[in-house]
Image (cartoon, rainbow, N blue to C red; front, side, top):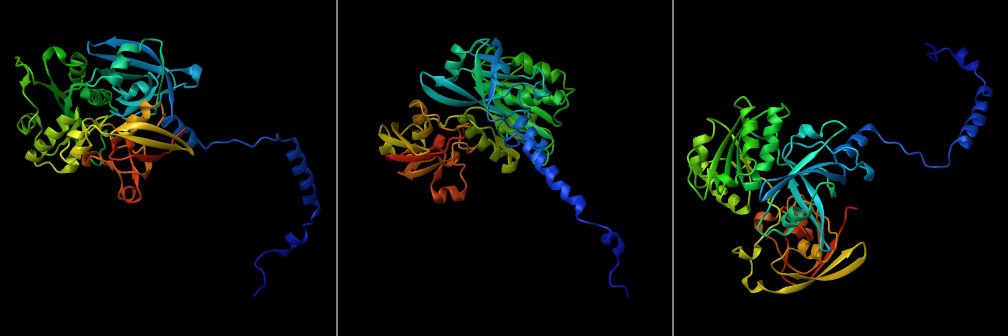
Length: 407
């Protein structure tokens, strides 16, 4: 048996001399190259940057007045470096950066428009429809000051309140209250254009017929949907022909829901969510079959039954540590730590303001806070090791907090 299974004559014919010239060639190439560090990106990183930008610079190109609400069309601000707006799933939101008399605030608003409007690399746009709320701090500022030509900064698309085929039923019963119609308008537009594939029955609650936001627009989409979208209006403060009257009860949902399996999506005020949770139990729906969109700022935490009554009216000091720099500001027991920081001009990270997204994730160094059970979105490890979400944390003593900004 041969010792080697290859032809040794090939190797014997090789000499080191042809390789010696490679050293000279390599040295010349290195000397000719620039002395800067090479910068390259994989296509996956480029795509990730387009889909998940940390900031988008926009221009308000159009404003439509709806009375106590306005629709703002946002387009890219190329002069500031944004050439296109990121694509989004129907019903996602963006966080808008506001400077309200020195208070640095991030407020979430649903992208009301069709996801198709953000496809491609040219002429991409979003529409935000913003209604005057009570309290009207941010919404009042926006409705009173935003105008065509203004420049604003927003986040990339955020949130998971969108249809997922593996989780949700093929038919969605959408419960909307007031401006809570905006995510369902986006879903309806996506269904009509074939971007989303499910059927939807919208139970849209308003106070009066004259006050129905986007009434003609949502009904026009339903008319173009070949029966895949149905809209039923429910009025709470008046009775009128062609409208349901009262609240969106389990009985009303049964009346319009399809036979068989369906999912329930809800978007509206927190009071509506509390009411509808009881109605879901009457329907016997499992928890996986109903979902609620984040509701923005957690208001009136002191009205909760488990909020310590003796804390009402008290004020504490909040010491904020950002990269080793500390600042102490006042904080009332009835206001969130996030709101106290923003009022003091501290640019604290936040997006959803509901304890859901985790963007404001901060370390509680000292002190005690009250966190409403229905807004505590922390993991077990966060609770064990003292991490909190300042947007839904209320001081019960003097507080020291370590905040980690994203920029």
